[in-house]
Length: 308
Image (cartoon, rainbow, N blue to C red):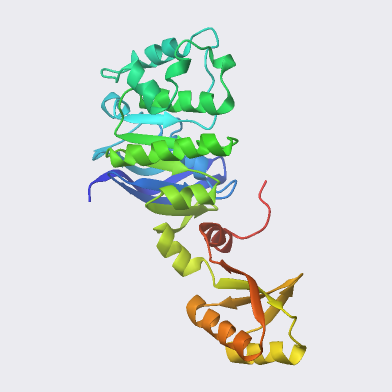
């Protein structure tokens, strides 16, 4: 597969503090690549180096097969778009004028109408940024990043603080961009977002890469076991619950008005619970399956302590 980004032994020091400690990254053409990590992990520093906003202490970076030495060369800048965590606009310029300004920075650009159509802002073409909602301002920031029709798009937490509708619209846009062959480098603190959008994910912590794989494989390897929650009517006596525990070879945990069993095999465990309920004339109610998610993976790999 064609590599759009290739990073080897990337390091960044601030005095005696090493924020990035020799990481390797490969990003392939046409994929949504997730770059995740807790606060202080070195994620933002790495991203800003790749965007050309910071200089690395050492290591090699290639984009589109070209090694980056010093500043990102103009030919590569023409092929990338950047969505920052926060974007400030000149409030005295209309949406249309902002896009015209950024389009003028590049040799080629898509039409203003197409850019606004992609982010569903056509009706705001003559609006001022100060009159846009938070979601609309973020979609404008994405339109600015897309104005040069980039092959590679960096998105740094693009949906932070947005309402569910705005977040969904950006997710759909990312999926459309991928279907059109764009490569997307995404950072996010929303594990649901990463699990839905990303083809592969690198998790970084303490300046080092912890693991890289697809969301599905990460969940299988590090997500932990599945859980079944269920309630019973009537409430079975203790000896019957102990009988089920022996059958399942596991502890049944009482949680308020329901029970929970942790299992590696949902189907087999559920079959045993159903057979037990029939045998003991117990009706199962409120049965829920709780499968491991990318959030479980993230916490298992980076710890559960609070990061500030």
